[in-house]
Amino acid sequence: MGEHINLRAYQDHETESNFPDDKSVVDYYKEKINTCNVLIDFIKSNFVNDNWKGNVAEIGSGNSKLLYRLDNERILSSGHAIEVSESRHKLAERYKQIIKNTNVININSDFMKVAPYNNLDLIIGIDTVFQLVAPIFEHSAEKILQWTYQSLRSGGGGASLTLGIFP
Image (cartoon, rainbow, N blue to C red; front, side, top):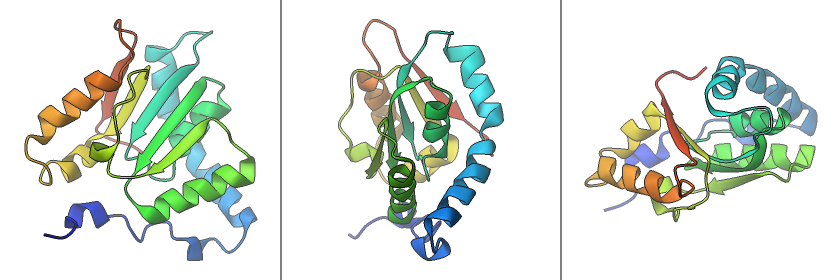
């Protein structure tokens, strides 16, 4: 059996051909990063304090705009952007190089194949990501919960946030 169709759902989204030069990438990210305002406010209000800098993973990170925004806000120690779409991963990497970001690590993989981290303070996932994964893996809900539990910092220092709506 070949790769499941759900793993290819966003393969042609945000392709390099849509961005002929670095300026077009930067302009695109300026717009995208500004769409994170509500989510950033929610994270700041519920998960961080004035001195917090966290290790964050985003499952289904797309173009990694949320992690770049967290870094812009100076509340990201390290960010792990896990995205299955190769085109979106390439765009995130291109932007990372343009802005010379050192805190976001873009990973082009199905997150179920990424080893647990054991030091994360926050894991962010969008419910559609889990809907895409559910039909692919037997016992996917249990595997997602196990991966999350193993990835969070020990001693109760971490939280997992699953969002139903994302701008």
